[in-house]
Image (tube, rainbow, N blue to C red; front, top):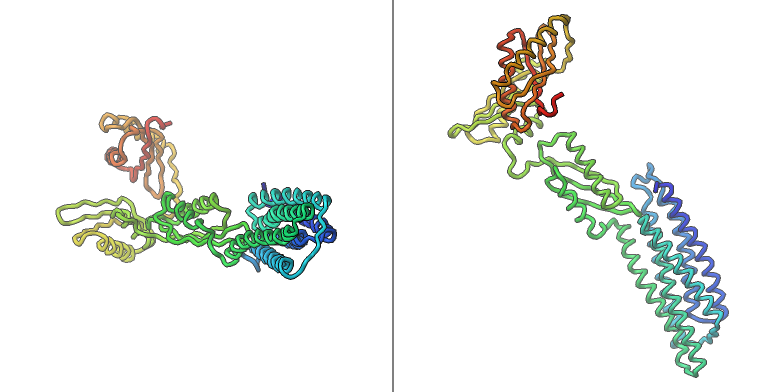
Length: 472
């Protein structure tokens, strides 16, 4: 169901409540005049406030579902909470008046009550209306998580219990007259006190929840549920802080998460999208995620070096390390802007070396190979016939070598290009899919050396390894 259909259904439910409350008020007012019953009077007052509450609910639903605007960047959902809080106040005022009138009739004033079959029939009809509307409103409130509709449903549900109590009070008064038991005349006032008790209990529960929402109290257990769900996600070290506030049926969630410091910007963005989607499965929410990089416990030295290079804005590859007695040797390739001078490139390499020595053991030797990052897209030079012939020769040479290298199956898709007066070769080599990557790298490196030895005019060879079953 889309947003417009949800708004329409909520408005329709609220408007039907207004009509039902108006009918109930008319019936109970008529009965109050006919019977003089305090219980019926309390019911009439209750229905009067139900009508006022239903109107407030209808108005609040119309406003609360408006989208956020410049003046209300968090939307208008609080109108529902405020509406429910006002309705709670109306319920409690009704209960206090009923208690006041009941004590007057019990101790200070006698009121003659005229029970009748018509009064009982009308009250049962009112009871049927209360049950129907209470269920319909309760279903809509649960479906759309609407606190205003929930408050309206509680109004009608208290009517159900209070009407039953009033019917019982009138029947007892009637029995007192029939059986000459004058003390049963107090049953009506006692029934009214029962109504007041129900109203106060239900109203206090709703009032506490709506006040929590107005004061931005976090829904019970929701923070811990969100924190646990986010912490269990892949790539998240910890959900350090979760803040939740509610406006109407919508939640606003702020969560701070720790991720490995080697995580790049695109990975962090993908994680935030995944976190937002996971929280949306728990509660409809507008989510803001703050990501903090952190060194995970037991972080590998290579990850720490990559994170260091990333912080310095440097690109590295071919990272390797060897432990020889008390000295740790670290080697890597550093890619720098091809327009830099040697002095500028060496300064960047020196800063990286110093950082690596601080990460490693006291005795750490660092050797950095500097090469251009490469940003230019070169155009191929002429000589199509020559490059095609060289492609065939290189492919034929490579396919003589499988027996010399374990796991090598064949080489294909050899491409030769001329650029910047240099000959560049690329090809695909099918290998045993179960070979470890380190062994694959050793084989491709050896193949590149063999090709350049056989064809010294070639400047660079790039080999793409692929599983033999995937080779096309």
